[in-house]
Amino acid sequence: MNELLLSAYRYHRATALSRWNPTRDGLKGIPTTFAVAALDKARRDAVNSVRRYASSPWAKPVTNGSAETGCRWIENPAAMGLRFVGYCDVISDSIRHTGWFTDPHQDGKIRGCVYQLPGRGGKARFVAAHDNEDNGAADCGGPAYVDFSTVYRSNFKHEMFTALETISKRYQTPAMLKHGYWAESAHETAKKEAARAANDFAESEAEKEREYQTAWQAGSQYAGCLQDLAAIRESVRQTIRDIKGACATLRALPDSLKARLRSSIKEELSERETIFQRMERLKEGEADSLYFWPGDERLQGAFNEGAGCVVLR
Image (tube, rainbow, N blue to C red; front, top):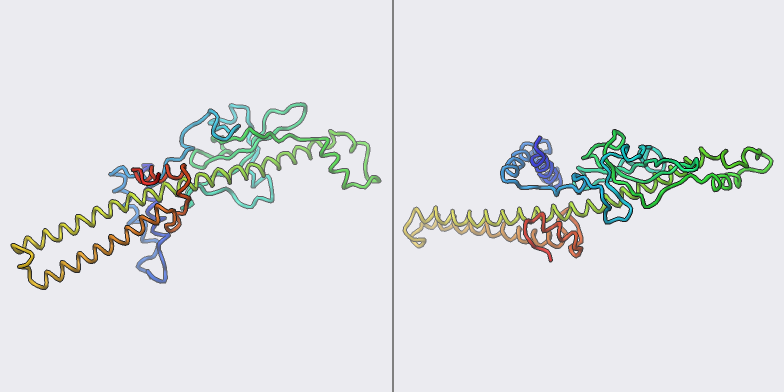
């Protein structure tokens, strides 16, 4: 399916669902009916090249250093000598979820994972990373964003002393006093440390992307409001043209048509005021679920990109 069409469909359906109130809307607003309307709006967006979601930074292959020192986007981890160990939630029982959402509508998700570097001196070395489901899962050889700033090494000596502190001397054997005895346990400890770090890494990156996507979508809705205002303005003009076409002057209009004109203009102006209020909330980062800090330059850029013009400075 066309990426632009799919993105727009997800946006319109999620937006409709977020505004649906079963008590207020009843059966006529049941969510299953949103799909057809969402697809119709998505097709119009695709025709007009309107993008409803910002392009994901993970869609572009990056192999050079990022803003975070030591982090690299790697297209083929195996070719770089990295062995996929597992997802952080599989390695550590303390992590009870399967990833972090990257957008306010919860369509995208990244998941922390652990890779193993070639060992040194018989010690295992692990690094934290995360994959992105849009580019392929890490457990299937997909690309990953790897944090090389910290390498988690198995420490036999530390593992031995830590374990012996909990074992009575009468139960200690000569083999236990050798570092190699604790190799497997030390490997497991280092792996779990990397897993916890990977989870924190994924959470941090997901939060940044979620904030960016939120600001971008707020800007996109701001652009939609501008289009709605233009449509209202044209609608009022058309109403006046239609009614004037029936009479030479407005004064010559029958009272019934005058009342209709006043009612139509009043309704359009009321809707216009509602749109203006929503635009202000969008700019302030306080609209519906699209909350963001408008004082952040990065998020200002995201909002302006979504709006297609400079709104926040």
